[in-house]
Amino acid sequence: MQESTPLHGSIYVKILAKTLRDQGYSEQQIFAGSGLKAMDFEAQRPTAPFGKVAAFFENAAKLTGNDILGLENGIKRDFHLSGLISYVGTASPTVLDALKNIACYRRVFSDAIEMNVDSLAKDGRLIWSFRVPTTVERRQHVEFSGIGLLVSMRLCTNREIRPDIVTFRHSRNTNLQAFARSFGCKVLFDQRENCIQFKPSDLELNLVTADNELYSVLTEYCDIVLQSKSRNTSDLLIDVERAIADRLTIGEATQHHVAKTLGMSARTLSRRLAKEGTTFFKTVENLRHSLAQRYLSNSDLVLAEIAYLLGYSGLSSFNDAFKRWTGKTPGQYRGN
Image 1: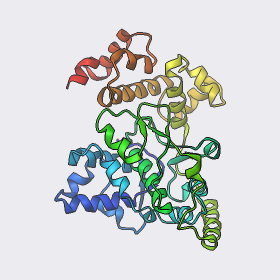
Image 2: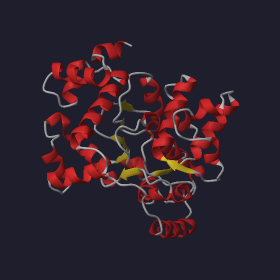
Image 3: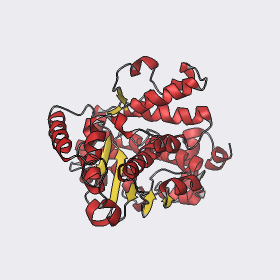
């Protein structure tokens, strides 16, 4: 059953679906497993739950046998198709202003994306994520969005901006050189956050697309849009999963610690999770199961390292849990 997730601009799904049709794939193949269908994209600026958008990208990669589909499509992405958010970004005076404005007005395009630019001016770090349950596979789309944003800044400055480093939270053990070439710097996976660290000199670059008058009009319009826009999903499960994930390796992924982090008592957290149809134990188990499968499929981490990352006291505990989930040992699962 597809999880309910915040709405996200899906114009790039529409474009990729057309490309796949032109390559001879059927609509059934193109939309398989995503919960989407062709009629969902009749609008000029379509939107869809982010979980379905992400599932579409994952299916497209598997369908075409292209493990870097997100990266390749992000490189050739036309940023202006994002609509208002792209225009307020490209009309900004500098790269720093553009990134701050995209972060500030991101809800115009998506209720799912989160961008942290608090330390952007100081140390060049742009951090982004998607406000959806951890179980939503979004590797291809995260790679699509990361390179897409960087390429947009390159086009707007006519400069080959090369970050100091790029990191991704998800695992990857294939086509690593393609990422280094595309981003122009070291790219690391299995890291704490999705982050592009820009050089201070690149943040100061002027945009050749800057337009002060248009910029003023667009920011006012964005403010109006945001005032009338409300979010469409509960964030409790997302916040709980994030708190759990941050504490797995330090042994504090308990209901008490997570509840305290979220500013409530353990009893209140239990009651609110019950309203969501789950429990804290189930949430931890589901998260561990999802992360374990990703680590086994998309990384070269040894089993003992995976057990540690998931917060297990030893490899035997991890083996027992994984066999309970899948009927296989971690080694058997990785060998398939």
